[in-house]
Length: 299
Image (spheres, rainbow, N blue to C red):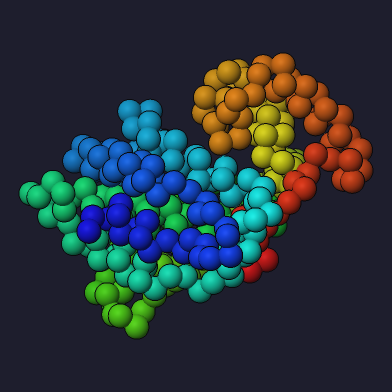
């Protein structure tokens, strides 16, 4: 069994009760195969995954990385909420954890199939740690108040994976390797935040107030429905110290949030969202149903 098939075989899909599986397993395996090919190409070009997931030469990796982040904020359909809560509150899937680590550590660069499996498994380990660390970092404003960014979370997650992936202790069948990696990454995140806080003591009050303002604004955006959050983040880019994108370009970059929307619909959402943010939170275009981010931060 290759890694794509193994991953889909071990995914905790809903069982019984008339609930349909939340994904097309055949399509997922096909997409994982494309990701494996790009991950191996990046590796053989001497690029780290941290670099490759932002490199337009690897569109599948780039789309997967951004899409997973945005998927955290998609509202969960009512029929899938019990499954999502189980996944969010569970202690992890030990067979899946060990399978991923075995594949990631066992690649033979001279055997293309083995190398593909190792590259894909490393990617999945990195993304799993990165998404959980994302929730830890952004369940409040504290990390952003000291200047932390999403790219910093990515870098910390990747450093932990690169440092610990091949540690022999994680091969122990009694150890849950993803759980250990996440714990180590969380410690590194706390140390990073502490270091940033110490550095900020030597800066002016204007800089600290700007960071607090941006942290409050980003925290508010994370409460909104995903399309509004993405569109308003772009519209308020100047306040966030970012570059504003053309809506057509933004739509191509963030299909999970904006796919299928017309330019007029996007303009209308931006206009309504701007007005709503100036009023009490009860009027904001907030999620009507929980997203995985909400479930994970409460777990």
